[in-house]
Image (cartoon, rainbow, N blue to C red; front, side, top):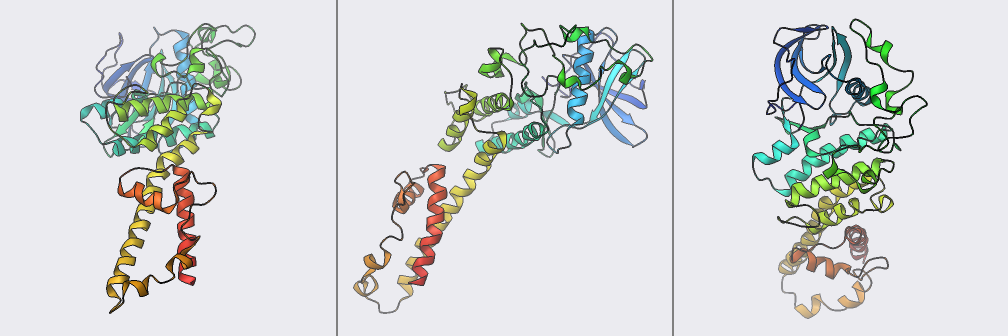
Length: 387
């Protein structure tokens, strides 16, 4: 569960009281506890804003401090509306902290549990989170622990990906490949009280260093990709697998391939590709997957509207033609329309007739067919006008 969630009520051994200052920030209230410490709402007097402080106390292991610094570096690489922003990292007494964007909301997991939601609303939230994940990939980051409880949703319905504490550059295994003399994250020295945080950070990016032992798992087991379970390098397609698994369960209400709720078949097909056990058979990237998730419904609506518009226009023309006889209107029609609406090479056989039937019956033609048929529809319409 994400520690920023207001519903989390766990307490740490050293919960800070309101009024305590960490650097220039003044703690106002406790928000919750997570795996690496506690999160507080705090006031930034210089910029007059509320921030979220993720705080580690002196009792935490050095490995936890290392993870917190990694998260700060990962978030500092990103500036995206669907990723939680980090403002700074600091040390106050024996507390190491990250000052982050404060989200007045709940986790996506909690948001979906409030009430049943239609599939398209769920999809919209996940598409937002997917954009944040794609932005991380563009910056060379693999999240490695994407799940609904690591996405925050504010009161306006905006989703942001959070918890980048396990993020790393593509290619890290479950552990291993440590630089000489580094066998575990716990070997990274943490700042001493009063020591500047930067002085305790090894040269280069912490994202380049191993996070755990070679025999340790990275991520949440339920959402891990097959390659992560096998302790193989995690890539952007590993995040894609976790994303598709999360979306499938949210939409269909059951783990794949089960379906406890109804949703479009094109959505199931898109997610099945992302859930392939072989990473190279998944979508080439999160951007490609998002194009499918965002574009397919639009194409279907365009095709249905175009077909319906043509039918209505044709019917209106017949009705408005005064005194016309059916045989006069249809004379030589087959000759003039030959080849206009026929199926084209490259389609899987739907043609315009199949598309109309699919639209009327509420079925869906393959997305590729719809795209090609729509193009042929436009071309055919132009040829008909010219004739």
